[in-house]
Image (cartoon, rainbow, N blue to C red; front, top):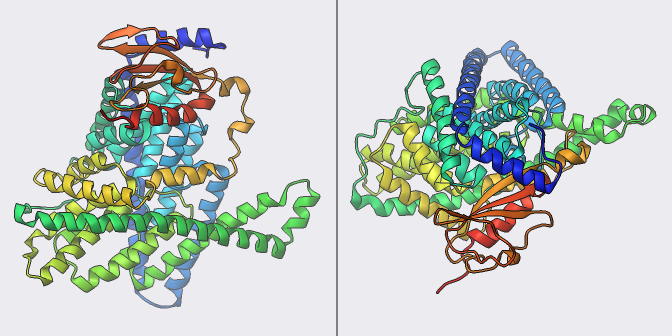
Amino acid sequence: MKEAKNSGSAVVANLDRRKKFKYVLIAEGALIGLITGALVSVFRLMLSGADKLRGMLAEYVRGGGAGPALVCALVLVIIAAVITLLLGWEPDIAGSGIPQVEAELRGQKDMCWWRVIAGKMAGCALAIGGGLALGREGPSIQLGAMVGKGIARSGHRLLTEERLLITCGAGAGLSAAFGAPLAGAIFSLEELHRNFSAEVLLTTMAAAAAGDFVTANILGLAPVFVLENGHGLPLRYYWAVVLLGLALGLFGVLYNRTIAFMQDGFERFGKAFGTFACRVTARRESIIRDGFHPSIAEERFARAGRMLVALAAAYILFFVYPDALGSGSFLVDSIGRGDYALKGLIVLLLIKFVFSTASFGSGSPGGIFLPLLVLGAITGGLFSRLLGLAGMDQEYITAFVIIAMAGYFAAIVRAPVTGVVLITEMTGDFTSLLPLVLVSLTAYVVAEALGAQPIYTQLLERSLGKSPSGRSYSGRGASLRDRKTVIDAEVDVGSRMDGSHVSEFGLPIGTLIVSVTRGGIEIIPDGNTILRAGDELEILTREADIADVGAIVDAACRSVEKTE
């Protein structure tokens, strides 16, 4: 189906398609989930194999001698070189992948879906296999989103449907990564699509369930973390949950700011290294002579420099503290069993915190979900050990490990509902829902009060502030940039538009509110239509204006300003 070429035909095409595809969207979501589940299963098997190879290399290094040390260094240099080439081939595989998906949904990025899939899988396997403290969840979300985009583009879907299919794929990716279908659906709505309509919810749930079904058949039904929480936390200790939430809120703000600090540091080093390398190799003169800008070569050297520094840190840890290598998911089970004493947890927390933030700051492909959950688990174990000094029974250490993971997630990602559901599904523990909610709300409020941005908002704004990649919108045709999409919105009680005229909305020129549904009855609005709390809006806009319209909707319909 070709895109409509003018506003009137776009209204008809988008709204007519919405009425039809709502009956088949669940089936499309399930199809995307099945494909994503299979793809992420292969991805997880690749990462499992990479972990085993890294373990074998670590054992070889422990044997001592110059030979093993030289072999380890050579392997890591090769990994750094290959990742650098992959990043040059497809820049959108850098980092977690979630900010890129958010930018795609906001109309600010147009990723090449097949290149991202190939590059992300290879790059993450190499980075995690090389020891970097990165996770699989963000990459899995990006992989699923690109599956959705690939299906949409192959079927020439309208942009409205393409955005929904990308959301479905993202939910299926998280579901397949962690065996958490509910968390996958909720994260896609809470963090990515930011719309809880029944249509989107059911479609995303179908995709997430299908993805989990495929993964469970390939990898089994065992939860990600095998934690036996036989001693649920008694109510008399809930004061400790609040105290833990306060600490996690502060720690989460520190984490987000450390990520920014690491990114700034690696970026400065990369620029200096790139300039120096160009001069040493005399590449600058030859590039200018051949008609290319020297910044291209500098950026290539900068990527290589950042990867070499990150893997040099991993090289040191191969010898002095191999437990800190990789995502560290095995640490959660060990800490929950009480295998680490107080001093061991302090050392592990310090090393893992610095190394995981540095790994992500380098720009390597890889996520932060799993590493931050591991840091939360370490913090929970440490908190329990500190309470043990005051006489608290250590039989509750597993409960504090589980609770702390949810609180730390809420403080960093600022998606508390997703965090509670995610930890419940990943641990299989349904006895800790109340303390999970309590710690998540506490950590969330502390982080909000301190003015820290949610991590993916922080990363998205940073990425959009940089020079666009080779397939930026500046290189696309105007007609493609003018594709139309329908955005759903709801007027919240007490928001600016509750009781205001449509003409007061302040939408960009060319953006139209084409439908208002009130009490199940559809109204065709004009500028004098007064909106009421609970009204469901359908807003037609260009792809170029999605981000601006989203910001206006948030401010006008979702921010409470009025009180009776």
